[in-house]
Length: 74
Length: 216
Image 1 (cartoon, rainbow over the protein chains, first blue to last red):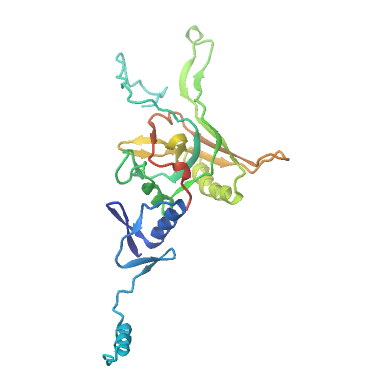
Image 2: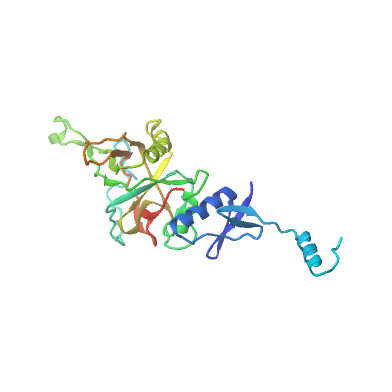
């Protein structure tokens, strides 16, 4: 079971992902802003909580190097 | 302790102290009902602030959005909700001393109300959730209720520092009724609460309007 952290004021609480999504969706329907996602490993995209890709984007670094006339690193 | 004609009285000769009473208590108009499976520890604290406070919308949203036994479901707006005082039960027999009846306690109370023009799917979902869990076996229910009323009222039952729900039995919602031209669809709501149901009743005022909450 995957859990994510939501925050309300100074209070933080872990919820199962589906529960957390439901809470945030309900908050939006009610026009409320009590609970927000407060988890560095997850992000909210179009109402869906997804795991963040925290790995460094090596390809982007190489693209930048080519654009600047350098040699892509191995 | 509730009166029981079969037990010795709890006080004899001395009357127990009656509290001064800090505040009047008025249910006023109940406009929606929130149902939940009974919890060993209530989901709300009676305090006006703090984590778990009944008064905060932030306490309600996780319960409405829950996918486990803590989930709360809401009725549509209910009209004409009536809670009559219960009747005194007496054994009357002219052979009793001076013909005076024997007091036996109080009867159960039947709560009634109506849903007007409700979405059939909502009614069906409420029936599916509530009727079997509150009426499959006589005298047993796993459901309790919070009454949501006028001017942000939330009514439940005091349980220590918590606010528990009111146990309700035989919760039913009728099939739709209509009297035809320009008449509203009506579903009758009915539930039974036992004698002494209001012994620890507590009506509190939230900091938001619970009537505006939504099912999730």
